[in-house]
Image (cartoon, rainbow, N blue to C red; front, side):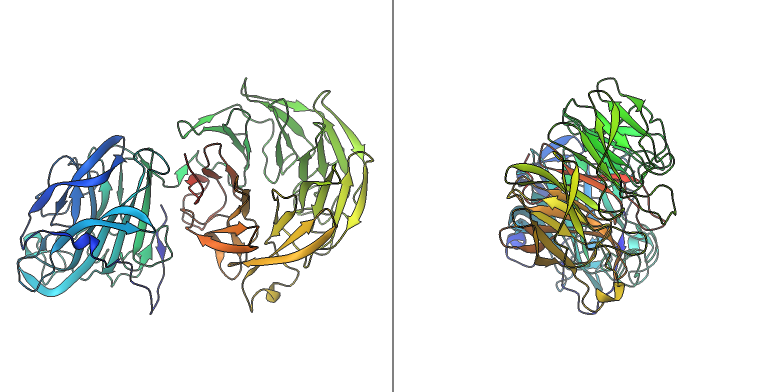
Length: 576
C-alpha cells in the first residue's frame, strides 16, 4: 500500500484525547501487560475471530496471550497475533512518564477500544524524549460480522530504541518496528510500515516515512487507517502483472464482475462472495479505450479500442469464452456504447487510430439477435471522449451525448438520439466545455455531469474546484449545481441505490493523480468529502456490487507504485 508523505506547519493532532481510553491504566512498569481485555465486539483478524486482547506496555496489543518481549521484530516473525503501532522498549517507571491506558471510546461515531501511549519514555527509565501515540480498534460490524478498522494515531515520535536494544539517548541500535501480523509469516497476513527497524525510519525527523509525516486513508497527517474486512486487510491488490491499466468493468447478471483492458488479451472475473479473481478466456484483440456493454441475454459486447479499433467481440460468461463478431463500419477509440430498451446497442463517435485528429460523427447499431451492425443517423458534431447516457422524455427513450473532443477543440455541445427515428437533435449546451468527464443518470431522471478538462486550463487554476451541472431531459436545459471540492478528469462516477453519486480519483494539473472520493447529494445539490481510496488512480473503472461495496479496478497511478491493482471501497451507505 502506497505511503502518502506530506508536510504541514499547522497540521491537526491525530491523537484523540477523551476520557474513554483513560478508563484503565497499567501502573508504572517495564514490559508488563494487562488482560485479557474485552473488546466489546468481535474482530475477524486474518480468519480468526477474537473478542478480547492483551494490552502490552511495549507499544502493542496481542491476541491469545500477552507479549513481554521488549526487542522489536519483523512482522513476518512467528509470534502471537499482534497489532503494534510502535514496537519498542517502552519504560513507564519514572514518575513523570505517561502511563499506558485503555478503555472504550468512539471514532467517527462508532464504538471503539482505545489504547494510549501518551508521553511515554524508553528503557532505562529515560524521560529526555517522550513519544505520543494511540491505537483504536473500531467496530464495523455494520458492514459484516467481525469487520473492524485499525486506526493508529501519532502525535510525536522522537525516540526509537532503549538501552536494552543498543540505543543511545533513544536513538540508534535496534530501531522500533511497527505494523500488524497474524503471527504466521504467511503471505497476505501481515503489514509492516516502511521505515520499520531502520534507524530514524519512523521518527519525526524522517519526512518520507516518519509516522507523523505520513497518512493512510485519512486527510490527517499521522493518522493511519487500515480496514479489516472479511478477515482481510483492504489493501490494493494486484489482479495480474501489468493488467488492466485502462480497463472496462461490467457487472454480470450473476453478480460477478468482468474486467479487461490493456495491451494484452487477458480478461478476469471477480467473485464478490470470495473476493477473488479468476482468469477467464482471452480476448481476440488487445484493447484499451474500448467499450464493454452487458446485453439482456447475459453476454458482454466489447467494441473497438486501441490495437484493432474496428473489431468487436462477445463474451459468454457461462463458457468463459470470447467470439469475434462482424467488424464495425469504422474504427473507434474513445467512443461510447449504450444499451437501448429494445436490446440493441448504439455505438457512437470516437477516432479511428491512436494519435489521429479525425473524429467520427457516425453511429451504428448492434443487434445481438443476429450479430449484425446497421448504420444509423450521424451526430451533428463529430466527437470522441464524450459521454452517452440513456434518458427519458415523455416516456420515450433517448440517448444524451455531451461534450468530448472535436477535431480542433473541446466541446460544450450536447445532442439527443432518438432510437425510433434514428435521428439526432441538438439540445442545450453545457455551461463549459468538457472532455474526459462523467455523466450519471440520477433516480429522478436528470443527468449529473462532473469534472472533465476545460478548454482553458488556467480557467480552473485560480479557484481549483470541480464544476458540475445537471441536465433535465424534460426541458432540454442545463443548470449548475454544487462544485466538487477538487477538479478532476478521467475519474470514475458510481450511482448508489440511495440516489447519491460517488466520484473517485482522477487527474488534474493542480493536484496530479488523485485518491480523493466525494459524494453528491442530489436533494441538497452539494458534495461532501469521503475517505480516500487506497491509492491514487486515473483511467480506472468502478462499479457498485450487489452487496453495496464499490469495486475499483486498475487505472494508472504514480510512478514507482504497483500498477493495475484493485480495491474494495466502503461508502457510508454500504451495508452487507
